[in-house]
Length: 239
Image (tube, rainbow, N blue to C red):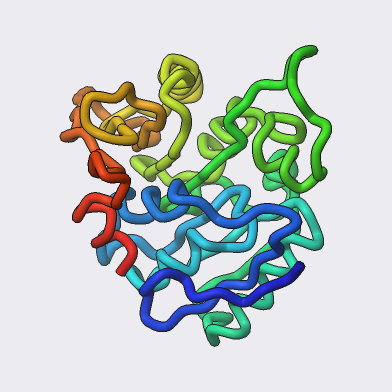
């Protein structure tokens, strides 16, 4: 069922969602609040944008042009409705394209920042894919793998351009190895924990194309208090 929801407390922004497919998650809030943004950045691309929560949130933080790439036509159409409803068509451009085909449509070395909340799970014989196709594509590396994202970032980013990813902590070594393969130097990492004294389940990673040596491990981010409420830091990200 299609619904129109408030985009948290972001300047009265609204977002169209389909409750039968998937709803945007906390990951899509954490990433635009993590990525490095400054006035020199002119173009941002969000790979696998879904119904566009990341571009919508980024629009409150930057004047840069934002391009969202989404392969599923019906999800792309939903995102387009949100962009038009919020009168952001002059800043946010959506493209119904496969990430693996971007070389056909965009020049190399042309994007300042790429963000991506990718499918987290590798597909294997034991993978549970007996669910809605929209959820399968969003959650599993069925259409696009981590390597495809890194390959696209290598091609699209300007020299010293930024790639920011949110992913599962257990894929951290895959991200490190992949970034190294494609000339993306990991520069900033932040581990996310459901609450204090729990194991990290998510990670935020920022890399730079042909970036110099030097890695910062940022303070841990705790999502919930012991009583289940969001921490103050996370609540600030909702505004």
